[in-house]
Length: 298
Image: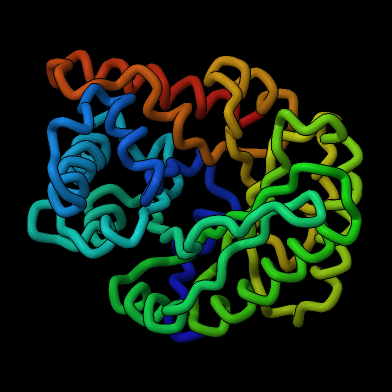
C-alpha cells in the first residue's frame, strides 16, 4: 500500500483520543453556520458560504485547544480538503503542524428510505475524488448510511454497500471509515444493532487479512456491545457518532463503552460562536475537547 502512512495507522489503532468530525457539508452547512452564529443573510452564494465555513474550521483547527494530545484525527469534507490553512493544504496542515490524522467525507448523501434504511446515493466521481485525496495526503475516508428500522434485508443491503465501496477505497491506498448509523430515535434500536453487528461480522470474514477498515457506529443501547468488533484484526478502530444526543448525554453514554472513542461533529462545535473573543472561543473548545476525550479513554 504505497500511500499508507504507518505512523498515522499506529496512531489511529492505538492512540489515546478521539476523532473530530468537521465534515458537515451540502444541506447541513447553513445549519452548522447558524449554530456558529452566522445567519444565511451573511452570504449570497455557495462560494461565500464555503469561505465562511472554511474560516470557522480554520479557527477550530488552529486553536491551541485543538491538540493532538486529545485529538487523533479530523474528518474534512471535499471543499475543506481543497482549501489551505497558512499556505498548506488543510490535510497537510493537520498532520505537519498538529500531528492530527486527516480523513475525507466521500459520500454524496442518502437515498430515500426503503426497507427501513437509507443507502448511500451513488458516488459518481469516487475514483477521481480518491485520487485527489491521495495526492493531498489524506489518510482515510468516511461515508454514512442510516438504519431507521430493524429490517434484516435493509440492514444487510446497507452493510454490503458500505463494504463494497470500502474495498474500492482501500485499494486506492486509503483507510475507509464504514458508517452504518442506527437512528437513535428508532423504536427498535437494540434489535437493529443486533442485526447490524451480525452483518458486519459476516462482511469482515470475507476480507483478506491485509485489508483494514474503521467502523463508525451509533453508541449502542447495550454497553460494550461492539467490543467483539474492536478485537477483529481487520478493524483499525471503532468510533462512535453523537447521533443527535446532546454532548453531555453522548459523553455519558460513550464513557460506559470501553474502548469506544468519539467521532462527534455537532457535539464538538456546541457552544462555539463567531463573535466570541479568541480567548472565550479557545476556552470553550478546550472544555469541550477535554470532556469528549475523557469519555473516549474509558
